[in-house]
Image (cartoon, rainbow, N blue to C red; front, side, top):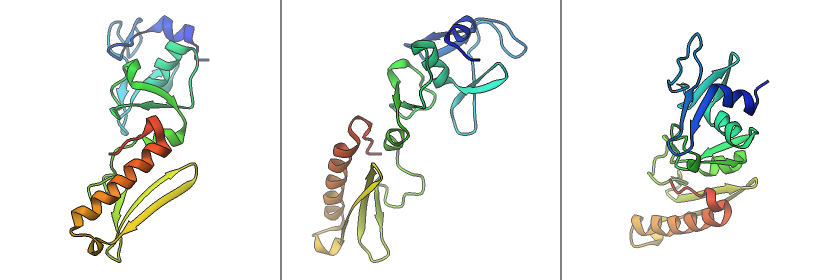
Length: 168
C-alpha cells in the first residue's frame, strides 16, 4: 500500500521548484534523477510498486498524507508541480479552470456562433447551464455584440466559479 512514509523513503520533493527526485536506485531509476515520465495526455506520472500514479497525487501524499480525488494545476500547466500551483478540488471545479477548447470557432471561450446567425454565450455550474444569445444586427457591429456577451459571460463565470474562474 502506498503511504506517506514509503513515498518519503524513496522520493524527495522540492515544493518551490516542483521537482520530485529519486532517493534510491532501482531497475529503472537512479538516485538523484527526476522522477516520472510524461504520458500521452501531458501529465507527469511515476511508477511506484509497479503501479502508475500522477506526480501531483504523490506530491499531495508527500506533503499532506492523503490523496484527494482531484488536484488542479492553477496555471493549467500540467508540468508545473510547484506546491503553490496545486490545489485540491472537485471534478467540477477542475473543469471550470480549463482553457479554450481546440475546436472553438469564435476564439472566445464559452461563445459560439449558432446556425441562425446569433452568438451564444454559455456557462455551467452545479448541473445548471446559463446562456445568453444575441444577434449582431441589433448592435452597431459584431464586435460590440461580442463585447456585451463577453462582459455577461465573465461576470457569470466569476459569480459561479469563484477562485476556479478561467476566461480562457
